[in-house]
Amino acid sequence: MQIFGFVAVIALVGLMSISGFQIVPESMTNQAAANNGSALDLTPTLPAINSNSRSAANSNSNSGNQTAPPVPVFSPAAITGEAAQNIEASTALLRGVVTVGSETLGDVFFIYGYDKADIDRSIASHTTYEAVLANKRTEAEVARVTRSLTKDRDVSTRVSNLAPDSTYYVRLCAERTGQLMCSRTITFTTTPGAYSAGEVRIPTIRVTNESVAAADEMSLAMTIAMRDTMDGEVYLVYGESQSQVTAAINQPYSRIDENDEQLQKSRIVRDIRGTQRLVEMVDDLTEDTLIYYFICVEYDGLRDGTVCSRVQTYRTHNEDFGKAPRVQTTAAVANKDTARLAGSVRMSGFNDGKVFFIYGSDLQRITRASGETSMERLRQIQDRFQRILVDSDLDGNDSFALTVRDLQSDTLYAARLCVEYENQNKNYRDSAFVECGELRSFVTE
Image: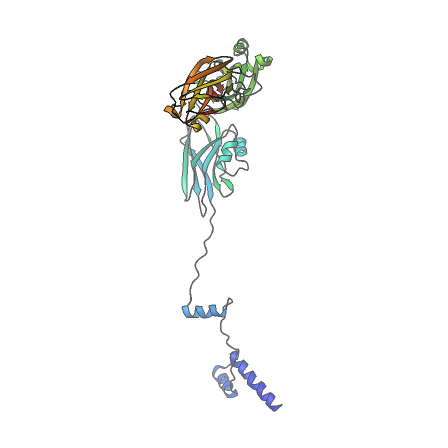
């Protein structure tokens, strides 16, 4: 038991030593109290230990105290619209400030117009410039300033074709990751374009394109310049009757009486100002038919009135695309250095066909002869590829035969009967096509 107690005392002393405790004689305690007037602090002094690991503490003690690098602070982008400058009757300078911060921005653009609701609806929940451009409302215009931005910048752009004496609304927008950010709305008012009725310039109408997506449709792209007038109402009058369409040009829109395919009317847009680019699509027309049409604008301002374009024509397309004459090539008969070629053509409603034989030793070229092309574009290359015209204006049906001579001996040839005809391509444009019969091969002696 004495031995056990002795061992316990030694262990306790060792533990106190490791923990930083010191055993101080009572005489020293009394001396310290006498010198300092207070009791000696026997609280153990513990070494500082890094919370991560003891090895990290040792490393820090060896390398000295080091200051950690500052953590970058994220700074968001900001868009600010500024007051427009250089304001005239139809032009103005739009301005703004883009603060990039820590971000990289995509397209930066102004969206503006005289209808604030159309500006906001054009932006809606879209996240890109292209989406806004594709879905913008009629009274909204978009002007891109830059495609990307990596540093702070003052931006500006001059816009034209504005309406005189009108209040415009402007927002500056920029693409950021997954969204658009836009400034608050800025307004400005253009100056009057005319100060008396005699100075007023009336609207102009220009049809810029006629196109089609189907045989029974007519698509008209137009530019309406309201100039010194405002609140224009644009409408289209069209039909198969030239006399009825022409007579309607002098009547107000409300008094034009429609008459089936002979006469129809369609209101395109109301209350436009400035210069607008519009597209009107008309469908359910008769295929392959001549359509007469004109476009009018009713306008207000210092002068009121109606102005119309001249009567114009448009022919709808037919549905022949995909159809073709029927061509057959019969077996070729070779005899030494000659061969007799034959076949037949049924024009199937097409006219003025150019019928010709093609033959040669280049089988790939013979195979690829058909398609949207012409006989003259099939270039001849001596024995590899030859063509011979046998009829230049075929209507209806006919059979053909031809003997070709001076062929190379012991050579594999191929031949086809073909016809060139005019048809409409997939875009409903008239084009030359070549249709050929089966490929027939033969070998000379």
